[in-house]
Image 1 (cartoon, rainbow, N blue to C red):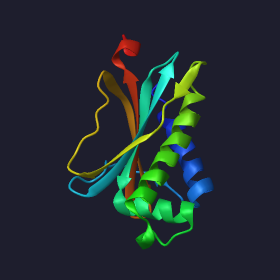
Image 2 (image 1 turned 90 degrees about the horizontal axis):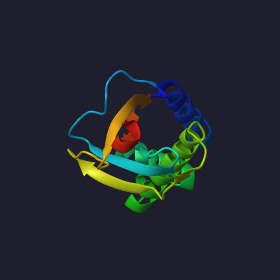
Image 3 (image 1 turned 90 degrees about the vertical axis):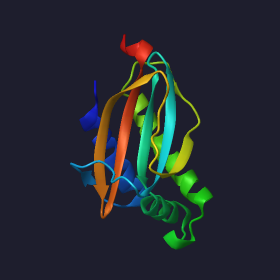
Length: 150
């Protein structure tokens, strides 16, 4: 573990096949102060943890536009949340395939705002993969249950 290369490859494939947008590695994390949307999905079973996807709201609107055949400016908060939930579900499902068998995914949850942090109580960050899609920074984080890590 930490699956950084695999997460980058899986996310790149999903972005390309679903959104038809290229992404590339990024050295810097998401800039602070911007409005961000984050989606998280829990993994339970033989391995316990979570996968989180974060990006700026403009990227979430662009994703919703592609996924729901809308102009990004016409994408509602609900559209953006649905798009982010579906993207993290796809990433999480592919990460789950790398883990021990008998793992299950929860429903995704989505939060948005500026200057906030997402925390999954009882977990520790395994890896955070920063990426870039055009002018938009995004990241995929893998968290592991502290009980699992012990």
